[in-house]
Image (cartoon, rainbow, N blue to C red):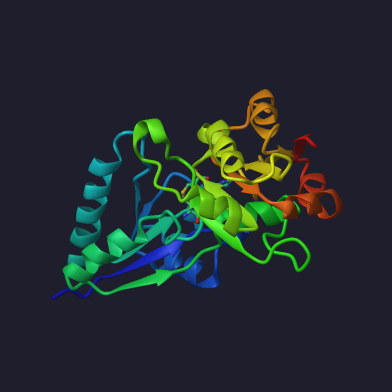
Length: 259
Ligand code: SAH
């Protein structure tokens, strides 16, 4: 048996202050920190001096191999009796593979804890002045992966359900697929004038937001040159940005375009 333990921790979406108290404690106490590409690297300053810091950012196309290696690393370090903090962007259970890693640990009888984090779809929206629900505009909110495409054979989304059944939709990993996403939503009955915001590097000093409609946003984003990482937020709540936008001004962020 092992004395080690793994903490699977959400580092928050970007702004380093958006990590939880529990998450920060996990960084401070870890012997080993295995961290992802999108975490705020400033957080690593809170690690012990002698902590081992292991970067495992994923290059496109190498995901499977690297994931395998991460699993081995988690098991190996914990079996050496180490306190391991597995640090992931946003919330570890939202497109963060926390489930797969926890399964491996459970399988090996290694104790672990999952420490939730602030997810980008909600936080980037809030920093852009967009609440994902609102009594007058949205009673439901859906988190969706946006990277699938029919011609690649990996689009498993229920587009009709999305178009008709969810007031606000946050697409993760979708900015490269924006024209397809807009087209699909329109095809399945979402009005083409539905407001859309694309928020790049949300909650960081690099945050930029573009606003348009399902019809126009792909062009706006292309012209503005927004790219990964970004959240695509679809729904009437986007209109609230006009009134409650707060972060861009305070932090010299740039508003690229409005409707
Ligand atoms: N676990 C993370 C999501 C990981 S998937 C979370 O809960 O936030 C990676 C995707 O998250 C990116 O493609 C992008 O869509 C989104 N993302 C992560 N950080 C972001 C940020 N600071 N601003 C905008 N989108 C972000």
